[in-house]
Image 1 (cartoon, rainbow over the protein chains, first blue to last red):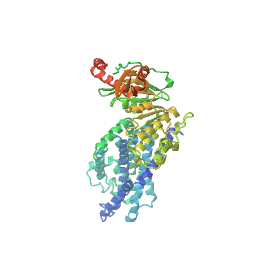
Image 2: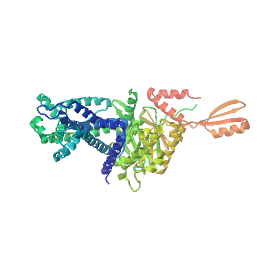
Image 3: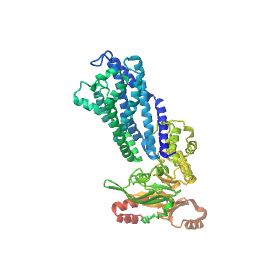
Image 4: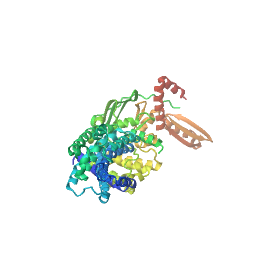
Length: 283
Length: 325
């Protein structure tokens, strides 16, 4: 077996081990269930509200949008957080000291985060089955659309997460990234349609993958009639594919370069220096 | 008191290439405008255990990181396992082991899982001569972690954690092993166990080992050769005995006779003691012979280097004169 294949297989096994570890960890389990709870609470408060211009429940519209948001989060923030933590505690250095270790590490993280994302998706969909009408799940079209939107969404956001994680040295600077992302979420039509926003805001929202992921998930789960309420009056599958695809290409081009540059600078003394600094921080 | 001879700058012998595991010539390291390494020269043959000693900030960690390929040198020729570390590929990486001082990595993993997973990366690099990786159970046994194999890494004690670090470093049966201050914070029992492990590694597989340490005792026990790095250069390179002899072959002889203590410094220790016993016979009590130790050699050599550099060689000769009996 070639060393690269061996590393990929070892990476998949790493993903498996990390999944096992994470599901036996109470803190992590809470992080997985919390979005579902938060979503249900949000939708409870939205009950009775309708999508403007229709009689469709706003809560039912929010669910697929939130699923799209969750995918984006998982990719953008999930991998960046893992990279930052692993850089600080020396996991990356170990990967560097192992032949093809970085490859195995990344494969492991992709397996971990993708699986967690998918499980999160299922967890959030399940209560919806009982609470909300208007969500279509039995339609073949639903699954077909999700089958390309979900993987494409992951490929569009995970490499970007790797870039973010490589560029941020200090865990405390994560706030710099999280705030703009939250801002984007407000703009991206997750909780409320953005048809009423000024044109330039709409343009900003449509430049980023979060809007398109929300739209993609809505196109999968909501009845076709709801397309009329979207910008442009249709689900715009082509544009969804195009924009997410462009972000994927951008991410996949940038990520190896930035990752390699970041990995090159890692050494034992850097980890030791970070450890010193961390010990001085009051936790 | 013994005089210190100014360390002669003998050129480092460079034996034919195939034998050399490490070949460092004129290694220089510059950070901004500060030169940390001013031309480090040394070599290592297969199976040798080298200890790199030196004051804090001398550049030991920098040197070892350059050799490991984790830091780009500023100038000089370096060959590790025949390859320039700046251009080492993954196959080169598989032939070397680095024992890192781990912190919190792989915290939630079980010990056995860590070793099993990391060993998978080395399997494709197995050769007829060297079967990689080390089987996990054997490895656990060698480092003494079999009893803790099912534990999560974050639950290990400091000493156990460090043993895991060693296991990770040797899992690929490296031809060359780097250890950076491996026994810092160890209690004496743990240190003794670690030394036995290093001896086993050096004897068994002809592994070449380079370790940095502050502990002169450790260097003396483990190393075939000691390198002293001070002022950005190697100021001494030899076996522990050779270095101790460089300080001078004089030894201090102490005894008591009729309740009175005597101290004498002599070059010909055995001859002096023979004469002493012949002259005083049974009156001589509590005879003690103290040869220059590695610690003396180290302190003297480093002092020479630092004072020589700081104040010029004039100061060194003044110091020398002042220490004449």
